[in-house]
Length: 271
Image 1 (tube, rainbow, N blue to C red):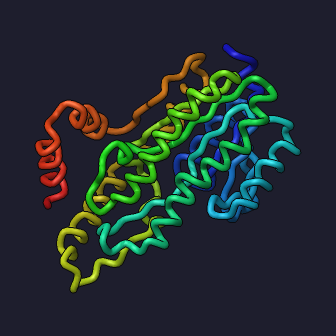
Image 2 (cartoon, helix red, strand yellow):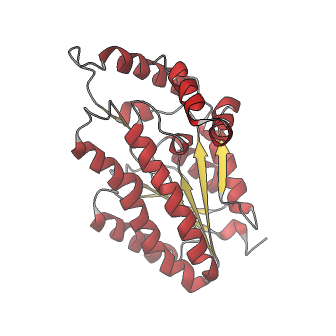
Image 3 (cartoon, helix red, strand yellow):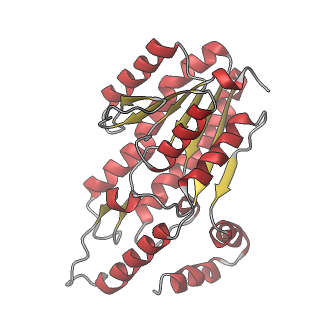
């Protein structure tokens, strides 16, 4: 096992709820020194330290990393969990909201990575785990821009992995499927306008998405998978966590004819 796992310093973005909070709870109980971030952190009695970080504010990212280094002197593990969701017909989704999602899910996340790398390189050790999404492996109807932002993070993670491995830094992606969190209440929804030509299908898709989240697996199961990656000496590039059909859908996309796969997706979404 590389170095003493019980004394690693872990930074988790988006640790106020859902996957981030569950991971912070799990790792802090095991003796890891855990820093979590939130746009507006609240004081708590948790066993980890919460600091302010807003992925849409570059200065906030710089200050957050500086604060972790000031307190801990290092960052051994970075878990990029924070991000934004977005739904809507591609034609009707405001491009300003699309920019916000890409700023959080890609650009801001990459800035976090870039500001952490020098500290990991100095110690010749580090693990970066980017929380992507199974949605990033396919273009989903009415979630196209979310799929695109996560797909971009997946691809750039592969590039980072090859570039910084020489410094002793390992990069992995963990793609969850539907998780029972409150993400639905925090994602941007293009309003389903009755006069829109997409109204009927979009509203039905929204209901389906929310049902999937409500029936999704627990955030704690994702946290356990993250723990495995941290403890692995040679972590893989990609990890999937979700229901059988969610994970199997990625393999189907690789082997089925494109139109056949598209027909399956359309049937699933009642299009």
